[in-house]
Length: 175
Image 1: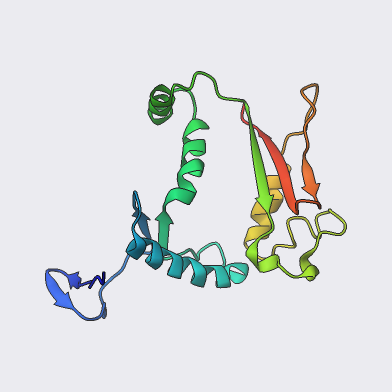
Image 2: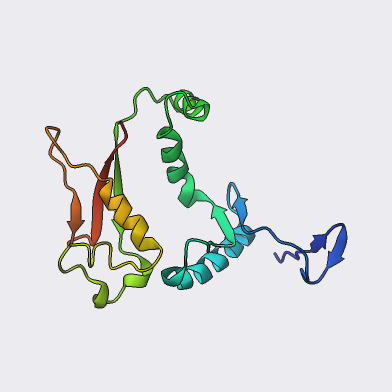
């Protein structure tokens, strides 16, 4: 099945965007299976992924797809809101959630830019932590590292960098 798309701006059929003002970003949400939307979002995500190492804080993807891969993240963010948050209350009621842990476990996996051995973790210190991020991701990840909580008096848990799985496990106290 071939789908033809039309570009209509201010009620007029157009072939190009021309000088029309555009938003900085377009958030695309789709539910279910839609190859056209998924393909468009993937095309822009791949292009952005190639630039991400040198992206600065003012740069973002033009198209941000909120598809199946973001559902867990969206749910987690909602559940981390204060008890008085109506969205959190709604989700808890609908899903039958009676209690939420006071700690969050985050797993960071090797990013796409760090596939060669130059990015291997050798010292597990701030020089190569998180596969040597550069520019805008580095200050964020350094700040994230400063927010981690360590197990004290609680159950034994695995945390830090794991060479065998090539990932980090970090914990954050939500209390």
